Image (cartoon, rainbow, N blue to C red; front, side, top):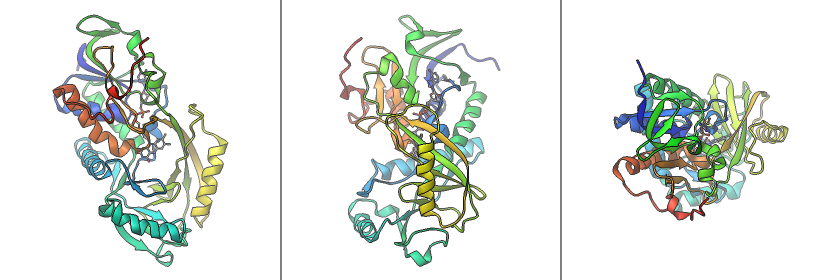
Length: 357
Ligand SMILES: Cc1cc2nc3c(=O)[nH]c(=O)nc-3n(C[C@H](O)[C@H](O)[C@H](O)COP(=O)(O)OP(=O)(O)OC[C@H]3O[C@@H](n4cnc5c(N)ncnc54)[C@H](O)[C@@H]3O)c2cc1C
């Protein structure tokens, strides 16, 4: 089928943000083309994919977790059904207690911090798998899961191709020709540009005024015959996610002073040490990968239209919880684009002052 040469929307970047927003726009019968620069790194390609309802040692409910997680599960399952693919796993998390105090904190916070619906069985150490080093026991968190984000990105690319809505290339607002009504990109014309370039948006002239706080993350892939319960994610500082038969992912680190895509020996060492203290069984590291989380200084996304560049939008800043947040936020972005609904001031662009060029 011949591709259109005019689109209402062009989305720059086919990570999680671009893929989900494109899904909604296509479902709303809008013409959209996603342009992806495959030579660049993508957080989505390396994300551990976990949807965790709690943040930090203080055991605080993650931002809008009770809304984001069920919405995300529903969307990923809907997409799986339409694509006839599998990338979402409804897997409980075993939160491994650090010490007795941590166990007490979890017990208290499960009542007071609004996470009650996620709390499952409380396990003593002798009830847990033998290969797990969890002397203080562990708590099951229910209604959570993980997205095989690498697979999701690949499957969404194929789906977009089938819809004639995908193209490889590199696009930036400042290299486009523009007139009153449309933008020109090679042989294409379009009306609105949505920037979903993850970390790379912060390097562009248009968005450099936004306070990004990119956080590099690395994980390792390992094999082991450890006696672990299948279909559980194990979490204390890092997490073990079972991916294939006898194959697991373990991560991820946080580094704020390195925005290269390179894997590092420092991270490998940290991860191997972390895994050795969690797993009482031999393992073999078979891979390591790195990516940059598009995090922001105030830990809220960036959504809206550029203050002076008309028809230039951004949907970005998904940070370290993008897997659960993206489905709800992409829907809000859709309502803003199509129905002029207001974006919540907590993450609207208007919370920042544009200094001009
Ligand atoms: C190691 C690691 C572990 C993580 N684990 C989790 C987790 O367990 N749970 C969770 O919720 N989140 C996790 N995250 C965060 C999650 O990955 C991100 O929130 C999410 O993937 C961000 O998606 P995005 O689409 O905004 O960015 P990206 O996935 O980075 O996508 C941006 C895309 O834009 C493309 N691009 C860039 N410039 C251009 C251009 N000029 N033209 C065209 N295309 C361009 C890039 O190629 C890229 O594909 C993790 C991230 C990392 C790095």
